[in-house]
Length: 200
Image (tube, rainbow, N blue to C red):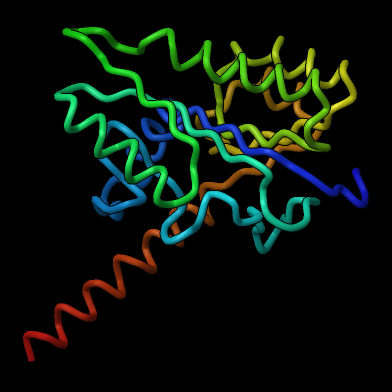
């Protein structure tokens, strides 16, 4: 649909993404720099700036992301919040990690920070494409406004957890469930093989 796309930015609704990823792939996920339970997850062993290329549907973007933003929250101590920020930064994200308090389900700061950055970059024309990793239909007005400003919006998420309105609003939608699970399964298999070798 779009040709010669030169620049792109990545925006990840980490709470939405992590919750769905754990539901679909919980048995193969491992705590690491790429995953902290109930806080964040990313593709196994991938850096945040790497192009998201899938065998069956390579995104029409080139080179590395100009910026990669990750928005999520954590319940616990300042130390746990700092740990999440450090881990996300290590794999290339600009992290926004909000604190949950008591029985708070989802801090509003996550949605607000994502929408603010997404629209500010669209208005300033800082990239050709905004890649949104989210499944929530509440983002539809934000996506439509970015498109009205001339930006292309690609939505990348699990088909089974996606609001159909968001899929229809996107210029391109890519279902990542197979590739996401495969990457984490391959990592789990390698770890298991190393453990077996060390025990022999």
